[in-house]
Image (cartoon, rainbow, N blue to C red; front, side, top):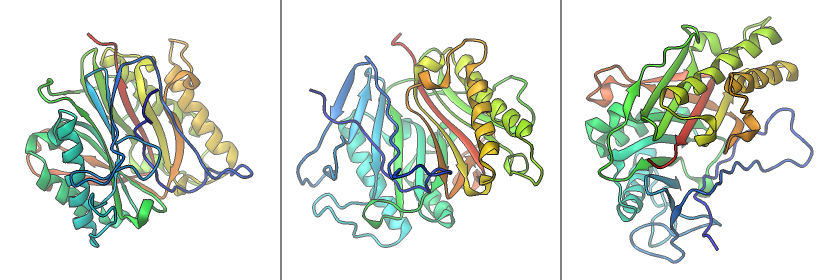
Length: 328
């Protein structure tokens, strides 16, 4: 029997309209791919043990490591001792490094980082601590976004979820997605050709807000172009939707509006994903559509050597993709 999956646990606003008695939303991905599991069950001095039915890490096909969301638990006492967001971030990173070391990877091999905070005002401080802990080359290729949530386990201020390549693997390359998506769509894609892909797809702030009079047609077209951007990042990396490990469509409360408007947006996103290949969104592993308190992506210029070069930009709509192709 396999050990439990790696997981993330956060509190988000309920999707609108909320279904009766709907208090939990779970996303899951599975398949026949080989897995190695790190599962710590007892108190230790090197990494926090489980506080629920999950494993600390899963290594997929000997290539990609998925780390469960890490809060600032002290391993020996299993309580959060750090009070400031900076100190909590340092403890999260300490725990991550310990888990990665056992899993034959290091933090600088990150492919994607999702940072969950209870207050978006903490993002700059968290980013500074992150930069202190990673080499400049890590800043140059990792996809990093901030997701503001209602609350985190044990009253934590920050939680880090990381996907890393094994040590010694080739560094991912940035891909320029050439597709008719419109100037207001940004695709930040890093991948190893025919192997793995991580991308953040988002709209410019002016395009993502639902302006007064925004029609169902415009909402569907916006969703379609965002879905098409996800598909383009996969195709340009030599992968398909069936290689998806996780795919999240996140939107913020400022997209709250008529139900049919949001339904049009999501329907358009699914149409954009389908493209000409006929694969429908329901066939994609780990797809979820979630509402967040706030969203920000970390943008970087072509030459990035310092945290000072990075820009944290607020967004209303973000698609977050992680994919792993067949083993070469």
